[in-house]
Image (cartoon, rainbow, N blue to C red; front, side):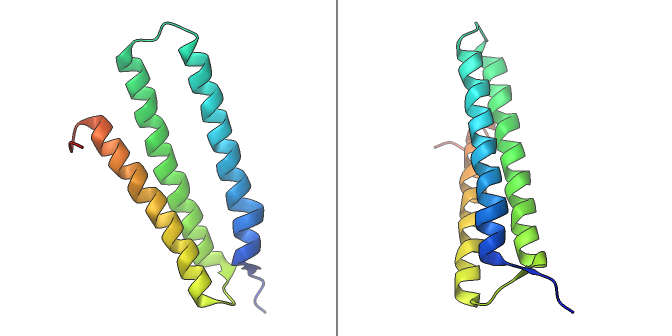
Length: 104
């Protein structure tokens, strides 16, 4: 018997709340850093860590959605996959710019 959760439930009850909490935590981290005298290098390193963590987390979420969810509407599933892929590409571009691998 197939016990997969709906992609809609997984997205709205697991992925979206996790992503919101993740971003709120990072906003608090950066708020605290701005109140201290951090060097640009340390700030840049922390930004790179954030970008790398985001890429990993969103990749894991995407794999979880692909592997462990029931997709009653294939088109909607592909739209959700596309959103996650787009977020990863934007974050990867920001990481590459921050590392100096590409210029903007």
